[in-house]
Image: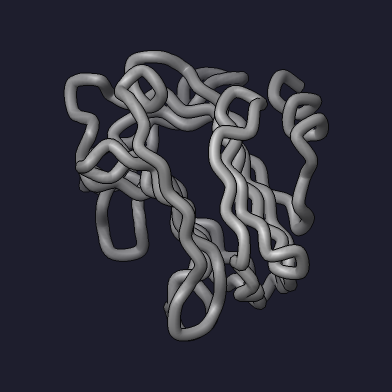
Length: 178
């Protein structure tokens, strides 16, 4: 049906395109106030930039709680996090070398208690925002490779990881090549 994900080898990557995705039912994992998501990505340089979602997570009523556009069609990277009738967002313009044609490591953190959201590129803080105090709450469903309603990611993802805490820059660097 075209919805499969190709996994390359025992220690490989997942290759996405069209409508392919990995759906992870989480039951009801309460992320509370903190989260870190990290992964390696290799975007298809023949397609990007287009509207994408590398992953999206929703609560019990299907509202977005977490999402990353890597990139959107304007070449900007967007990091959305927070529950309720809206979410907190930070974004930054990027260039093709940062999202396509090469493996890059991305990490996205949020700490609602301190009000900070950060984006790390290859282990170094690349973007941050303050006054981002929306909590995360329970996440029921996680989709990797596209958003809940589309925007497939044309590329490869490897070592997708999630923590229920905000990792420091050093911790992100420590996990990058494990």
